[in-house]
Length: 245
Image (cartoon, rainbow, N blue to C red):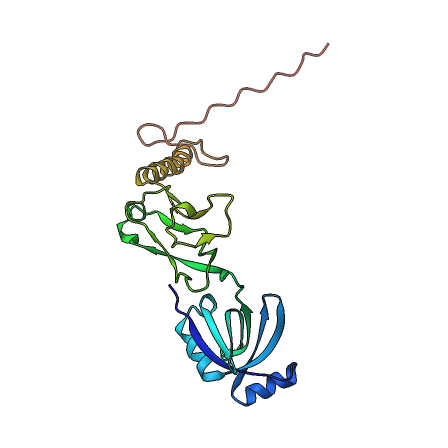
């Protein structure tokens, strides 16, 4: 489970690009808090503290306690705008957690024991349909990831959401179908060999036909037995002129 992290912030009296640029010049990162039917709040975060939390990973799937000059908010980072060159944070959008404490978040899928899957050993390929799954869960019980064990899985095997073990209070957003997470795709070894043999036989047939084909027009006649060419047939005598009357 992810732990609740704490960040201190200060209120930003003005909104707009000018105020945001001034915050960055002062070594801060501008941010906004919204949601839960309350007015949005403009705040500033200390750059180094924010960057430290971003580098830890799972920043957008970890509940955060924002301490804004003594007033605390439980939030989730919904969007982090980064510099396109330096890849450092420029602005953060935080969404307040509702009174029930349940949030909607995407959890990544992790696959283990690939070397113990007979299907993958036989040349199959792990086809990941969903790299992450959206779930409802309490803000203080957000899973880091969902783990799928590939041990013993053969070619043609499909893994569905019903096979994923989820902690208590965590449930998928999609509830009306047992959707697929991943499959092990690929042909069996015997089928591969049969396909290769069929292709080789098909390639050999045209070659055999070409060897037995008649010589093209203008080609020399084959020599007769004994090595000498057979004499050409004599031309038929010309017809005699008709008798005079």
